[in-house]
Length: 173
Image (cartoon, rainbow, N blue to C red; front, side):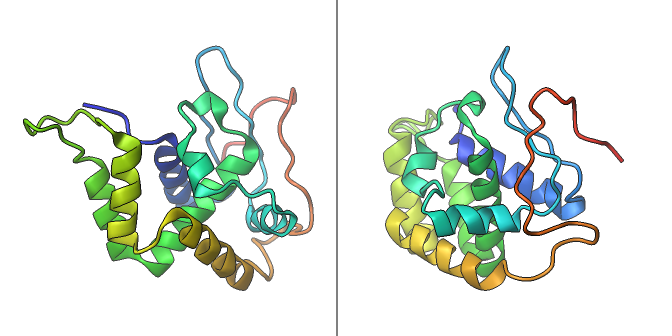
């Protein structure tokens, strides 16, 4: 048994959670750490800002994250957005890629995650049809076309993300 890359867990979790209710998000961190969090419902303007400023993490960078404690708020925005892109543009490829990521077996057929970075790279290309640089460019282009316009009712799409800092937990309900 092995853990798949952190970006997969966090991006998929944010995607499904936000499909249910954009107002309530959960964030993971390492033991004894505090996660970078936001109570903001509309993340699209933040993703756009990251892309336009050249600060959006790239797939190759996200793959290097080894623990939830390493995730910063921009990583949360971007991993969610990457899943948003993949689900909406290539659900079949994404499904194949996700299945492949759970089948990194050694020569005896035991799931060990041996050479997981190389496995990830090969299966990403095989199922999604792009290398990391091509993916980054395709995702950025898609976001620029699809994340313009109004956000959820009552939100200001131009407002920056507001991390909680020391102000407590996000509202529930």
